Length: 214
Image 1 (cartoon, helix red, strand yellow):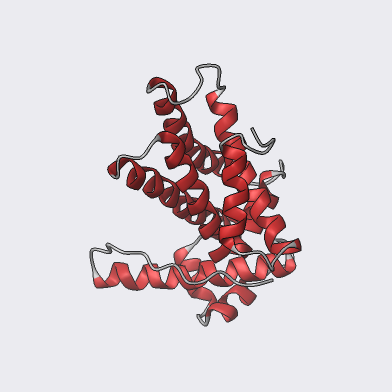
Image 2: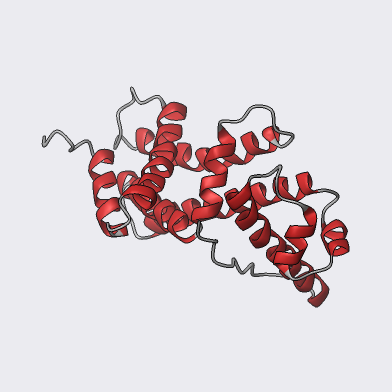
């Protein structure tokens, strides 16, 4: 299972803050790779520290426990996805595009994110189906943040008359996010020979309601 590429976080206000964020980044990358390979329970703090190239005490300096580390990893990763979706929507709006074009750009942004961070995405989707985790409430909050971005575009589209007033906005937003996640994971696992342009084109047709050829 491939590891995600490093994520560089901009805008740190001090060198000490930058160093701490860089350390956390190493721990995120180590944790997501190991947990994807072995599962959460089988992954130890010692292994995370070793994979990250830091002392075990460094893990506990940054996070109280392995559970907190994983919870923050989920918050961090979904936050990046949410930012990508928001950027795609705002970029389309600035160019004068329609809300449907904004949704299409968000689909593309989601696919790019998942292609770049497959191990994190696999973990995230797997955790969505679990109900006995300590971080379940955090996961629901960050999931809703991503879905809310899509809801905003749908609501704007309805208000502008670009989309039908009959649309169930919360359910449609969740369905669009779910469609991208599941389709992208299926693409990577079973159809890796297809390009991101090919997958985006197929999902774009679904978005625009043209699957039946109408």
